[in-house]
Each structure stands twice: as structure tokens, then as C-alpha cells.
Amino acid sequence: MRKFIVIPLALIFAAGLIRIALADGAEKTVSGVIEDSYCYGTMGAHGASHKSCAVKCIKAGIPASLVENNTGAIYVLLPKNNEQPLPADVINRAEDQVTVTGKEYSKGGVNFLVVESVK
Image 1 (cartoon, rainbow, N blue to C red):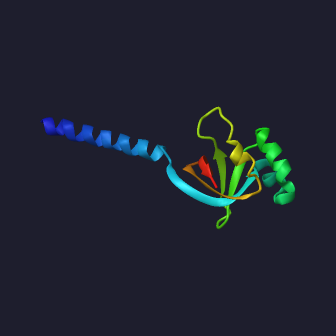
Image 2: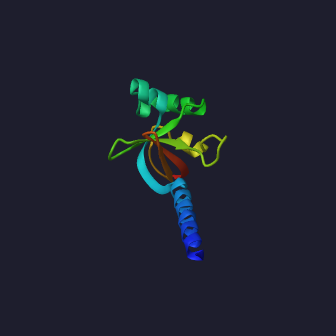
Image 3: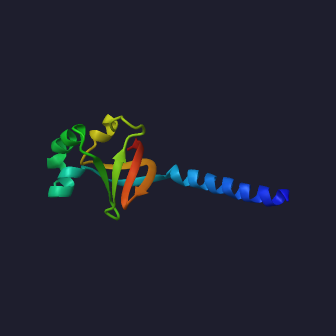
């Protein structure tokens, strides 16, 4: 009788651990260009001539996004901690070719990358 109780409880516990592991986000490295989402998304503005505008927009709170080189996939860049801005080394690299490493999340068709390093 005890096996009939222990086995289901072990399965429930294992399922909970799997859910926690998946919620943590997988480590990912993406190479691309950091863009400010507003100008890039609404006007297609990008490139070296747009750099100062992109930096100002991101500093003002417009989400920064990383446009992946190979696929064109867009990742919204997030800081490591809630209620904090992106690090200055990310913001000041707007319109630059970079490689970002962090944890990847996807919700509702949107890709997010929590920035751990930028090179």
C-alpha cells in the first residue's frame, strides 16, 4: 500500500522540478546588433547614423532589442534584476555588432534575453 502513495508523490515532485528547471531559462549566446525597439520597429531606423538617437531612446526607457545576424530573430534585452536599467555597456553599444550571453525566455511569441555579458 505504501508504494501506491510513494510513487505518485515522487512523480509529482519530479514534475515540479522539471517545471522549475524549464522556468529558469536556458543559457544562450546571440550575435547581432542592438537596436532601440521604437525606431527600429516603427521606422526601420538603424545603422551608425542612428546611434546617438538609439542610445537616447534606450536611456529614456525604450526597450533595447538584439537583432540576430543569421536569422533576423529579435530578442528584447532585459537587465539581470527587476526594477533596474540595462547596464551602460549594453546601452552604449546600441547600433554596434555585439555578442550577448544570457538566459533566454519566450512568452507569447516574444523572445527575451536576460543580459549576463556583452562583447
